[in-house]
Image 1: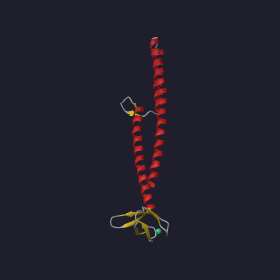
Image 2: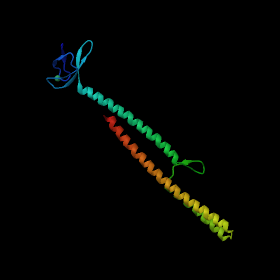
Image 3: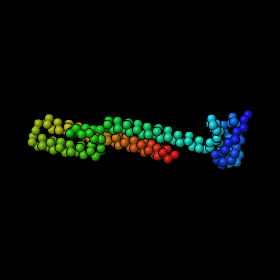
Image 4: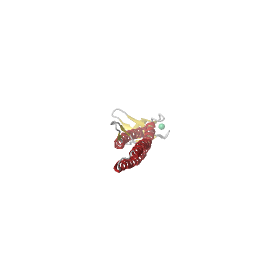
Length: 177
Ligand SMILES: [Zn+2]
């Protein structure tokens, strides 16, 4: 057993430690110390600092994991958003809205009602009127379908926004550590 003299990094007191010992507690300031045996000199390192470094590393890893989560969430959302997209008459792509579905449906219905009225009043044959009614029913079904799709989209979007806000908050918390 060989005794070495080391200096406490907490209070500067001289401590005598067994060379084989890795950790000591200072008799004076009660700091927890790691005994570091470097080739040239044996010294001590404060344990709290060591723990802090470990905490820092864990926090950094958490930040990286959360950043990955955020990227994946955004990627997944842009994929499902694409699935919700509707192609307009001029080829433009847009997400469904309830107002858009209802407005489009109403415009279509107004036209078809006028068309039925004109066909009926001008004495057009029965199939013309019937054709108008079928188109009208088709417009109504489409309107309901569009509204349901828009509602689904709104739900999916709000879930995505909530999840994203949660991750961003966790990320800010982890970055503060
Ligand atoms: Zn000390």
